[in-house]
Length: 241
Image: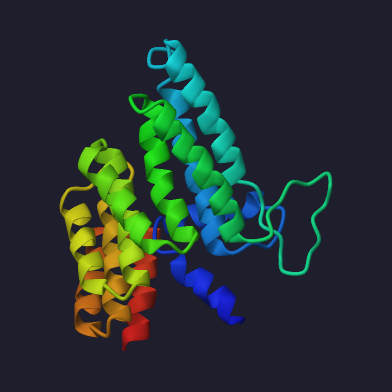
């Protein structure tokens, strides 16, 4: 496996359950992180749509919603494998960073032009995740912290998961674990307790704390019998023996 591929796989630290759905929709064999962003974008825009009717009544909200859809389309545009030329009838980007840069500008425009709309909150979240994809972890941390401070509980939970990913990718596992503990203690509809626990256990494992990882995997298996989470925990426990 190429070093570049390993690096991109390392970036994929949150909401693993969305990966399979994103893989089925992808036109090319793109990296897991980019597929995850496609899935997350679709989920969030769908959430905006559910709120439609009563929320997007005024003109500003409608304009913001339209531009949000356009930005999401950019974010869900496929990334070509290395050395594959662009196809004139198939929009694509040469790299994850190139796509993130294009989408980042669109999300920033939404935040700047429509700061008090529902779409602006989601756009602010995507500013953080696209900054991380661009390799600007300082900006990603700042933007995600802003969402955590000012966003709704559900949106703040997503931002905490993304920020924990930034912390893990910059060798700050203790800070990532602290965020996972917060999410497990107060789960949201967007990030459940088990999701936070699984990521926390994986972080313990990566941080050479096998006893803590083992304890958490055992708890997951006990509290969630006959589920995919329990199966994953059992597999991880076998690895730790």
